Every structure is written in structure tokens, then in C-alpha cells.
Image 1: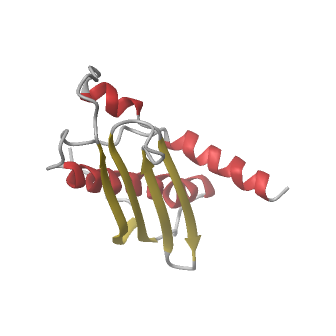
Image 2: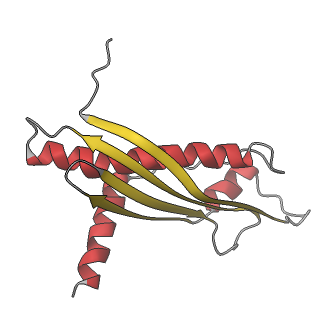
Length: 149
């Protein structure tokens, strides 16, 4: 099947900060690595900025930030720049590309960075789980609403 290219173009993606810290594990800990990784709290913060022709997305993803679990503490801060040809798009299509698609692309890029960071780390590769983008965006909107009250 031939893939259709969207009007959204990723211009650049930069990692502006990446941190991997190993937190020693207790030898008696019988939790599997998969269960350990699944227990990590994940925090995602992001902001979208838009000019006429450019969308900038800043995103920070923190895994096990407060070091509550042994293993890894990971932090990746990044920024991505996108261009969009909005000609012929309705509001819903434009929103999907500007917010949902850019957020998803950023998370996927950071997932790759986290996998690379942990590729040679003591307990193996950490792959950021799939994220419910709609929930993330809705929670961000609620947070913004609370801050403006």
C-alpha cells in the first residue's frame, strides 16, 4: 500500500538535555525487570508555540524522577519544529496535525532516545510505554484551565 504524506512536516528535532542515572538494586529484589519498568511513574510536560508558518513543541519526559524505584531515573528534554501546509484543512484536521500529531511524534522521538540511552545500561533497554495522547492533551488543557482561574 502506498503511504500518503501529510501536510505536516518535521523540520528539526533536538535533544536539549538527557540524563540517565542508575539506582542500585537490592540483590534480594525478586521483581522482574519488566515489572520494575512497568512500575516507573512517567511524567510528561509539553508546550506548543505557533507562528504563521512554524510550530515549536517543547517536551520533557521524566521516568522514575523521584527515584522511588530502583533501576533507572531518566530525563529527556527536547524541542521539535514543524511546518504545516494548512491549505484546504478544516479546524479539526488542523488541530489533529498541530497538536495530536506533533505531540505523538515528539513522544516517539524521545522513546527512541531513551532506548538508546539505556542500550548499554546495567539492566537493559528501557522502552517508554505507549502513551494515551488524547488523555495527555485533555489533562494538559485542564491544567491550563486551572492556572487561568
